[in-house]
Image (tube, rainbow, N blue to C red; front, top):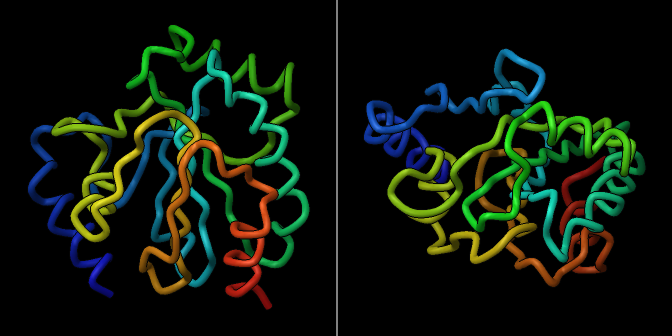
Length: 173
């Protein structure tokens, strides 16, 4: 619950400074928005991604996690970001790259800031709640069904690692 309060505070504080939609939403790579409240009651693994990074191969693991657990309720949300200067120039290029190279079908946001004062309100709330901020691409944040932060992992922890799978499975029927 504290995470939801922090998210609400970050949304209110960051609404004027953020280009992302407010209300717990991300701009979708497909247009429109991805509303986090639509996932309430389900675990959500939020991962800041980049197409030209040494960890880009983790897209395959994210898709596998999505395919394995989606029917049981898991949402894997990819958040492309150029905060570390390793993302393609446009959302269209990112979408094509991910489709062609990894067959991605999981939801993806538009290119989004994940660090610093201009970070998306979600990442501001995570930082306020846990002190965790992505230090590189492919950092993972598991949001529990109640909206609290259930875990955070750095780039080196692969999507299929026991630590992530065990944490996800704890919230699935």
